[in-house]
Structure formats: C-alpha cells, structure tokens
Image (cartoon, rainbow, N blue to C red; front, side):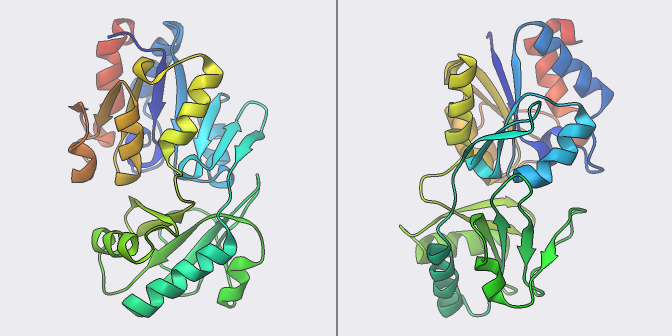
Length: 266
C-alpha cells in the first residue's frame, strides 16, 4: 500500500495520556513526510483548543477541527472553512432531550479562532483545557456556536448518544467523542467531511489515505479512508469498522503502523 495522506485523531490516538507525542511517533511522522505523505490532524477539538497542541508539536499544516466544522491552516493561523450549528436548533434539541430524559447538563463550543467553550455549572469536565462557566443557560446562546455538548447523570455515554439520536433525529447529528463527551452537531457534519476538503486541497483521495482514531466520532473518517486503523484502546464501535487494530496510544500505535508503511521510519 502507498499512501499520500496520514490522518490522525489527537486525544487517545496521537497524544499519550499526558498530552504529548513520543519521540518514536514524531520520527515515524517525519519519515512519512520525507516519503511525500502529508500529515493531517483531524480532531474533535475546536481551533481554540487545538492551537496550543499544534504549537507544542510544531505542527504547521492543515487541520480538521471541531468534528469537521473547521478547516484550519496552523502555519498561517487562519480558519479556511467553518460550519456553525444554528443556536435555535441546538436550544430545541436540548429542550427535547430534557423533556424525554430529565435534567440535561449542556455546554457549547463557540465559533471563531478564539471561540470559548462555555459550560453550565452542572456540566462535568476533567480535561486540562480552559472553559468559561455560564451563569445561566441563556449565555450558551449569546454567540455563534460550532456544536453543543450534553450530559445526563443517569445515563452512560453510549446510552445517552443512542437516545439522543432517536430523540433528535433529523434535527442534529449526535456523536460520542470521549469519556463524558456526547456532542450535538449540524446534520451531515463529520470528520470525513472536513478531511475530504483537506484531501482535495492537497491533491489526495480517500484511497490515498491512512487514518487513525479511537472513538465513535472517528467512524466516518476510518470508513472514508483507504485504510482505517483503530487504536488498541479504541471504542468497540470503531474497532468494528477498522481495517486494522494497532497498539494503544500509550504504546506508539500510530508509529507501529507508519514504520511498516514507510520502512525508513523504523
């Protein structure tokens, strides 16, 4: 197999649990680049939460952020394309969830290069990333948003995502992006949509792409790519659609595959 595009998720895939990339993985990505392949980061994080990671990695290429809503040029610090979620639609979806499921905690990711993540006081968040706590729910709708997040204290992530898809069918799309992270997205939006835009800009096709991920929000990307790789720590839904399962993010799973595909990476 010969690939021109290496697409990697960030959290749980490219990054270790302490939010870094190992030297082995850096070397494997560099070797893929030397062989003519483009590395594209495809993340659920919005640009505002991605920029510090890109800076730490020295990443200056094109990136897909916020589940495909934003295509961002890291080297130029510029958003090339952006899709927003209608705030009235998001509000209605959360009202429907509340009516069917009981109290729902909500948060939103605001649009723009510096868009804040705004959370209700009851929304639980553990990642070491900055958030703004809203005084009341109306503050969530004060500015344009990319997506909304929901939690329900009595339901696990998989059950909440499944129930939300049923309740909000046709209103929003729903994805599960990580522990405690169930997201409401514009209908039709996915990582594969954003990645296909980047691939076109780089003159690559799906068949030229190897993609890596770990959560259900990566399913569309792995299905779109010519070769989809799930991490050993991946959600069962992603493993079910993967062409290959590699080692975990803690065990250089991305590098394991790239060293085989680009032998000079070893």
